Image 1 (cartoon, one colour):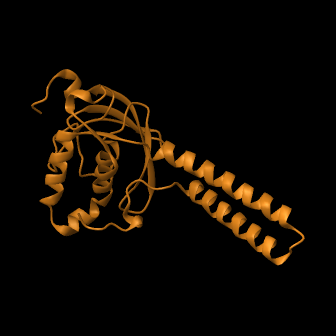
Image 2 (cartoon, rainbow, N blue to C red; image 1 turned 180 degrees about the vertical axis):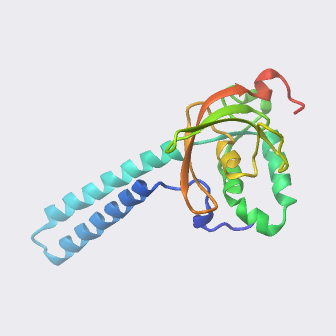
Image 3 (cartoon, rainbow, N blue to C red; image 1 turned 60 degrees about the vertical axis):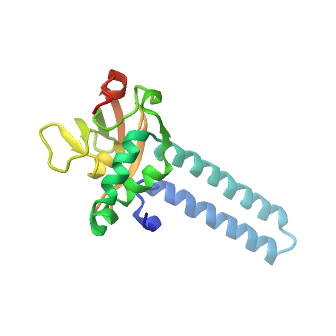
Length: 198
């Protein structure tokens, strides 16, 4: 796999989460500067460092909410890795987010995947949280789509893979915008239905 720059990650921190990071960093640096510059103010420096660490914990909590742990079946993982390997390098760079999601996913056997997880060929309802737009689609491998299908090679499809019911994820779109997708219903999952041939 090619090395991916952090800016190419599909799942990213939202704007306000980045502000929390900046605030935490500023407070820590200010605390250290005060503690070093004015030996008589170590208490103030300690308080500022403490606030900085608190902001850091809050940021980590929010990141875990909107960059959640995902679950992918071993079959889906193998097929998707093979699909990505077959693509031109330029196209693979565009799909860096999907590649990184596969790398961090919890991989399970098809018989062990929870019934509310979005796997390949699942039919799901999801929403774009900020706009409220709701969509129903079947997640597929193909790039040529039929009505009601969503390719895993598209940003929305990459974002949904491995999410469970109610989970949301922040995803960086090709235009640089950050969008948050939430799974509102898993209407059909092949593993739960016993359709393991799909």
